[in-house]
Length: 204
Ligand SMILES: O=C(O)[C@@H](CO)OP(=O)(O)O
Image (cartoon, rainbow, N blue to C red; front, side, top):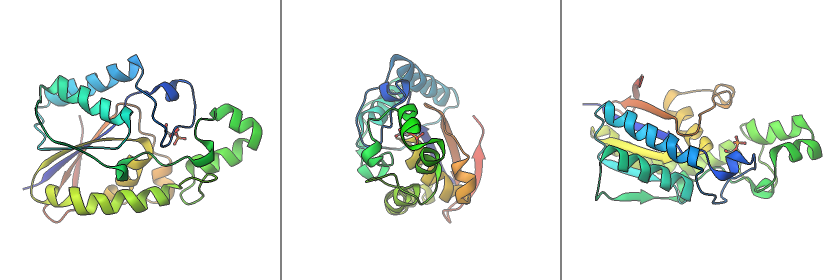
């Protein structure tokens, strides 16, 4: 029996709206972000998904997204596991800066390298490779055994912690994963076989 993995990026945050580097900072969802989360909850409910296990990061925007999804799905009284392993990539010294101001200061190319290279970290922060080095061991230890056992697992997390998971699950190259943009509130659903390997990506 296959397990099902539902990955959801948090809805739009106040800092997504203001175009600020966010990382481990902790802004709230905007009204639009709340609507995106609720819409994803409705879509999952319409497809009759009944998750067994629930995971999120230690950051408010992902936790609130999961809460709104569960509310829309009518799921109450479940245990939610929060872990920093699922946090957004740490943006280091760029955290809180405006992305356009950063481009003016350091140039378009340098900022693009910090945002979308695989292994060049922003000053004082994490590259996608560094993020994967904490996200994947957690996935392999805590979540993959549940999927192999046929469970349905829902994870609400972040653009780059989800990129790390998508890269591993789909077996993508660094170039392929860095070209993949996951929209706020966007769900990605996989069937995972008893061997832990991807069976198929499910279209919603
Ligand atoms: O600011 C951030 O933490 C992330 C996600 O919003 O931005 P980026 O698109 O640069 O990875």
